[in-house]
Image (cartoon, rainbow, N blue to C red; front, side):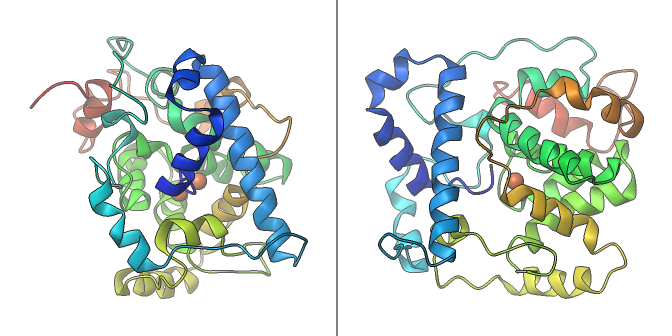
Length: 280
Ligand SMILES: [Fe+2]
Ligand SMILES: [Fe+2]
């Protein structure tokens, strides 16, 4: 999920009480603990940005972030399905012969589903269009496959099955996360200062893409994904996928052969998520 750095991850697991406690927790309990942690972080971030009480937050520099690279066995851009946060990876439940988007949510998107459901729920509360709600629901799900440049990967994954506006919103939310738009209600997140370093400036390709999107007639589509993304962790809100089944039905062209088996240009991406244990 966007907003959850390696530092956050370490703090989170340490806060839980270590590996033994973690091993004894159900996946639902872990998801709840993660949500609490992110909410707390978000609240602290809001308090700091409002000049609230508490010490000034300390963020890593880009050099600190770079120094962490060789402290990990995996790279930060790798997809959730391909690594474990604690111990070895687990066997995955098998997929049906003709998998639907719902099947991928239930069987492969576990690590991002809570985050994207919260975002989509927020979009509904804010009276967004169905296309924005769907974009929020899908915006980070490609993290199962790959995280680096996830806006572009995610848009490509969904392009054959959704409207152009929805894939535009998914592609460009990545870029717009780096640029404030206070009029639209988007403030640069402290989580990004942690993930990228406080002195990080987006690379030229992101800058160029920002200029393109800022002047585009659909600018507000990805912008509204970022607005509903940032405040996605709300106490006591536990949206379920069932709430969005009708919106998926009206806005997602489910291939009858199943995702991964429809010979679309991105079928291999779905198969890679269905069968991530295949060695080649
Ligand atoms: Fe997100
Ligand atoms: Fe994202």
